[in-house]
Image (cartoon, rainbow, N blue to C red; front, side):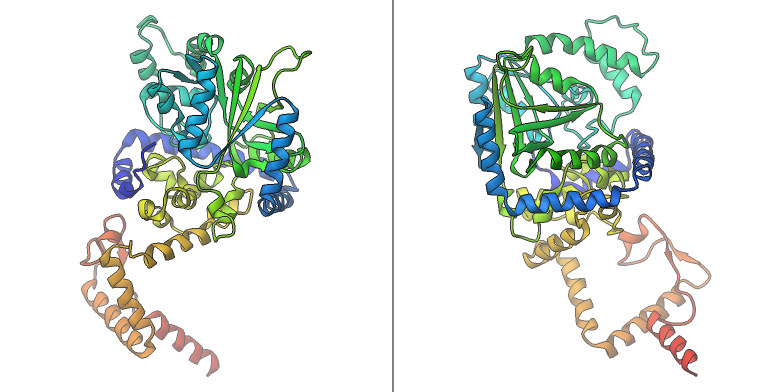
Length: 476
């Protein structure tokens, strides 16, 4: 997926001007918030679980090499194979080689953000192999040739009428006058289209929510069952997973699963929670003949021991973006790469470089809602501040902003001059705004007044002057 993060401002402006997108964002967001709040309220130990989850991931990251090697040993013992891939190129080449050895012509896929990061679909298509997305949201996005806009609800940006119009436009072999009376009709049509692909697929590719070192298992959670069909019907199953997905034990995995669904969709557990361990054994009724785990680094090991290591605790629940006021009005595509919202504003610079993504850590109000709802207690605002510092240090900040910050720093280091300057500014704004109540346009403040009014300062001087007056009155 091509990185377009440098165009965040332009992307955001288009998103704000798109009435269909604004309708979709308003409709979907409320449901996520209400369901999560109800699920958390119904579990008294939720906050304690957050602490347990944080500690599990911190321990694992501190001993990541040990648990990855233990995981590989268990996978091999169960008849599977682990492929270590340092880069996206390595991972793409590995997946293609497995598919070619299997003689694959059709590959079914479960929803996987790491496959989006790697560009697996485009790579397979370029080499004559047809990938078919089987998650309902991913399926329509593949038809529309769009990227996901959300990490758990990929078609978050679409309305029901978009689905109906696209199915009529693209499913041309079906009657043109068919009726979509309810949402179920959309799912029924997609199921009919996908059934043949499930049966024809030579290889199935899924992601992995967790990898369990104790057993060599990969875990996926879905609400549609497509993940199970993707990994049990084809002769070969490939699980794609980044290295931080490993956890030590089954008990650790179940603790994190209790956090994941509640934070993501407000469910106690997803409808399907599937543990896969190795290839099909002699007595098994189904399952793949070959089981491959493609372990991907792609920049994550460089985060270990840095200010951004805590980002590797993320379990991809999307609670941060569901609660983010910025994501809530611009949607996921504005962020310009695979991972949107607050978690993307930290992870994307870590993986592709701050030079390509300098606007993302600034796409935040720093209200702190993301950190307050994160089940893994990841300090997202703090890490965005760290990226802002690096942006400034590398002179990536626009010259105008750097100049203004320099002027402010000059005044801030000289308290007397600072008080004089702010007194003059407040007085001037008071005179200019006399009788107006608020400024709707103001020189040098267009970025603010373009989207909101700027209140005229109230009489009484600057904040510092009013504070000093209050203190004097208290001590009089």
